[in-house]
Image 1 (tube, helix red, strand yellow):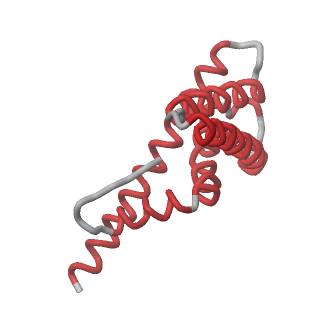
Image 2 (cartoon, rainbow, N blue to C red):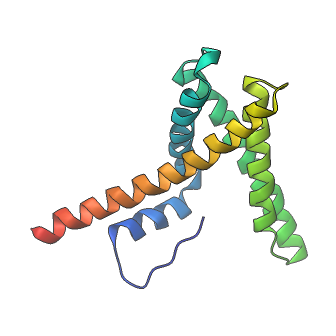
Image 3 (cartoon, rainbow, N blue to C red):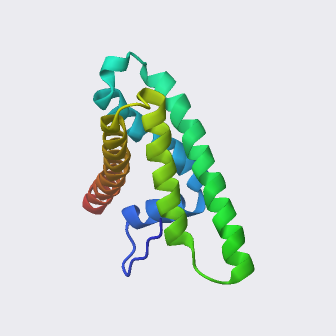
Length: 140
């Protein structure tokens, strides 16, 4: 995730922090994904904490995927981070689908929805928090 802005804002500062602390940001993103997974896969009976542990493992593996691609990028001097993002997303969707129901294609479609909704809701939350902080401190 990269973010650039021409005017300083709290949202921009938060996104810059996310860029510099992606490990911590992954844990927060995992909470959002877990929320959606709990909603989409509620019939399987896993509690939120079990899903968070699953996502900590999956997101840790995606960090390893990014590491391998970063090493390849450093050695070859070609940009492969877009491909790394695709592989990481595919792995995450596959792993979530495998956890809940590996024999149903709908589990993988739900996993894709969960992943996308988790990232989108995290992004919206960051934007709203940054906007609210800016609005509160602009009035004072």
